[in-house]
Image (cartoon, rainbow, N blue to C red):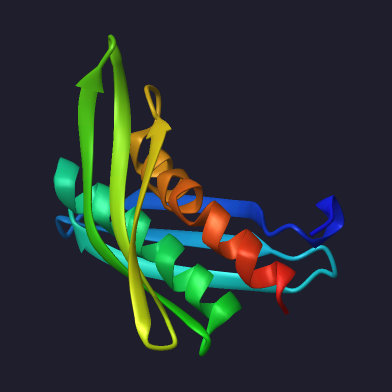
Length: 135
């Protein structure tokens, strides 16, 4: 897979609503200009905001790879390690009849919600690289 064939993290938007809910939007883009958007909403809490952003990223990814590959967000958590905030995600990837577990992390000191989105991309990098290489 060449650099021009890489999926890019194009846009990220996260907002906390007055209703006590939050909304996230992630846009991934392909070198040819195609864009894949995922959206999600959740409750305003640390866990709810992280899950909302991770889920929006999973939905954008699935628009790229369905029906051959599917993802399920199993969990997302921010932890303090080495004097920094690290967001860790756990995903299940389904390809044909087999499933595998993926884990990704992102150092997200300034913006944990955005870090949750990027942790999903880190978790799926290798499997997406293999997926695109065989297309």
